[in-house]
Structure formats: structure tokens, C-alpha cells
Length: 252
Image 1 (tube, rainbow, N blue to C red):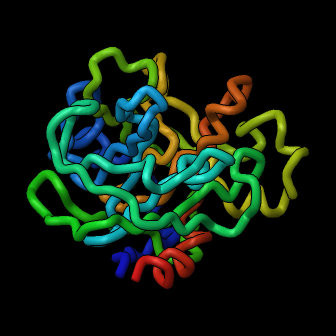
Image 2: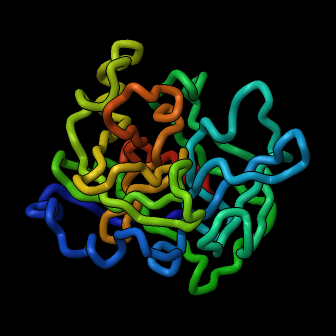
Image 3: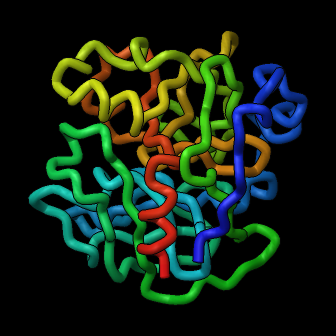
């Protein structure tokens, strides 16, 4: 089952400048610091597998990611796989194919804030120093604004093709997109987190499915909605604590 870590408001006091961040963030970060992060690859029509997103290992058979990567009219689990244990795009590591995607029941994931999926892999994940499971936030955890998190991903603008970990600060959901009126406001505020790149980072390393991490605890999953709405000033993430109980019962 998924491993849960209990978070509380008190846990975050003074956390916006937490020293843990400097241990894992920066352009030269490697997978050794975030070994639960894996690549999500699509089989393209021309027969080549290409990285299109990221996911997080939550136990030896399941990964947590964005449902938008595993939905749509052309989706077929045969055309998805993950690559674990590799710092670089489309090379090395261990390939594992997809057996079934369990998307949170929210309808059209390109138009809904509940963009999260628990994906069952075809084979058991073998843990190594570069392939590890993650902790996830406990149900009901409170994630305040002004908290500095680590965002792990490869990112479409990253010319190095290497995994990086960049700082993201949580901000009010009012800063997370001009199209909020398309959503139920209560659902938006309770199911998502909004983040902004910390000053000094001029590109986002995020992929759909990239984790947001605090002290080795995964508290968010970057939504594919970010890539459908380039006018949004913030980075939208599914708030794991809203889904924790569903994740636990699904990833078995």
C-alpha cells in the first residue's frame, strides 16, 4: 500500500525558508535525490517512444501521476510505459509497461481540476538506490501559502534532457489561472494547489505528473491543465491530501 506521512499546520511553521530545500534543489540535481520520480512515455504513431510526463512511485506496483496523461479519445494502455531509475530522457533505467490506469472519477480531465491517476504497472518494481517509493501527504493535511516546495521533472524547455529539481512556492489559488470560473470554486480551492517559480528560475522544469515535494513527502501532482492554458500565471497541482484515502484504497 501507499506510505502516508502525517502533516499538520504546525509542521509548516517557518517552512517557507526551510533548509531542506537546498539539499535537493538546483540545476545539477540528480535522480539519487528524488529516486521515486519516473518518466511517463508515449508510443508515437511513427513507432518511437517519447517522454511526455512524469510520475511518482508509491509502492512496488503503482505510480501516481496526472490523469490527463492516461485519458482522451486515443488513450490505450498499450501505448504508455514508465522508465524508472534514469536521470536522462529516453535512455537507461528500467522499463515497465502499464496494466491499468485508475483515473479519479471526474470526467474530462482536460477541463477538470481533479487531474490525478493511480496507475498499475504490468510488472513489480524492483527497488534500487535509484528506484524508491515515495511518502504521500496524510488526508486533510493543510498546505499553507508561502511554502517552498521542490518540483521534480524534465520539462519541455530543459535542453539538458536531465532531471532537475526547481523551487516552487505555494500561492493563493486566486493566482492559479484566469479560467477558474469554468470550475466549481469550492472544488477548485479544496482539490488543487497553486505554485509560482521562485525568483531566479526563468523556465519551468515541470511535466504533467511531476511531483511537488516537501521533506521527501509528495504533496502535489502537477496537472496537465497547465499545458492546455499557457496564459495561466501559476502552476496548477492536484493536492494529494484531498485524494489520500482514495489513493490508498486504489493502490492495492
